[in-house]
Length: 469
Ligand code: SF4
Image (cartoon, rainbow, N blue to C red; front, side):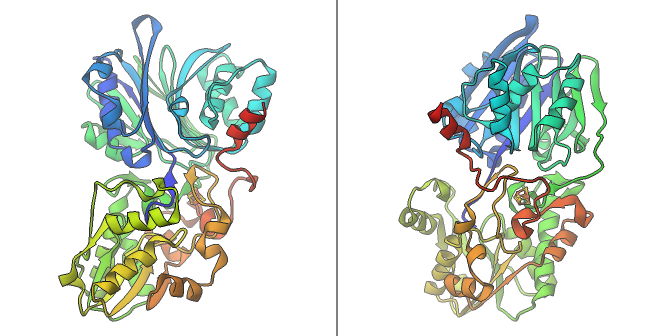
């Protein structure tokens, strides 16, 4: 897919009575690096309520070192890796974001997208609040710092009524960490036991990496508090879920467990379903590395056709979305994959891709395979055609740029230069991820948005307002 869509962030929260929560948070966000590579940050509160924070642009390993981790003392920490869905990519927009108001000082780390952030920001400005970033996450933090309520639980409940959209939050106050998932549970959030303490994180892979034991997912609409007394849940009022089905296809790490299912296994099931849906004779099954590999393994197992690597990914090439022009993107694709000619020459190939967004990466890969001697290239996609942009925390091109919005499947096949093209049926996708079909958001395939969105809003809406202001 060439990373033309990007997740909106990873969050963690750590309560560690033995101290050094920041170090655990560091390893937590390090394992969530795939969820955001623009900036990273950790905030802590130490004895006496003293706040500490360090943020920086770039990868987690570049932002933190022994020195700055030592300057983040205390038993409570929250951390964040960012890819922007609202607000430009800049150091000011790095998280955790700080907010100050009648409820005191807090830090917030946010994964998601609050669709009514412009209205909320205007309301808060009328109350005298000021903003130093152009993110919806700061709007969330300031709203929490200003909202009425005697306890944090009651404030967060009111927040859930006012804020529309997707949010998995970790909130650091003077006394506790709160972990919150929006009432439809668009983005993942789970928690586990870590020695005498607790950790919450966007994905279970972060728990595994620090040696924590997964307790469970935080339910949609649930509030979980971590403090000296242990863990306390305020159950959800919501009995609906609209978990992002795309987390299973592409965003989440394959070793994570989402909604009780291992992502790797779900992806294998998608590949098997693709073969059952549209079987074809071929000499080998291969994948666009890395995210499509589990589906290719599943396809191979179901079909009896062998799986072989045909492309080696150069891990040192920057993510292709960073490049500003189409020419540079194409060059990026070629520098990213080296073909294994011996595996390709004279073979009929089934090429598994996780999804097709703009349709600019897959044709380059098909071309590489043909230039390397492939006789036929049959493209199989683990997702249905993406026709609608996401407004719930995934950065996607506009409708005009989505290839499936403007072309028939035959036209797309011709643009890819493939001998045949099949997308996974939406019902088979829902079966493959193992849950109840109506538990998922699949709006980018169906246009059935669970929360009304203003389609004209884009990720820079608050930046434009700032300029006007
Ligand atoms: S629109 Fe697509 S990417 Fe966005 S939350 Fe829904 S399923 Fe996920």
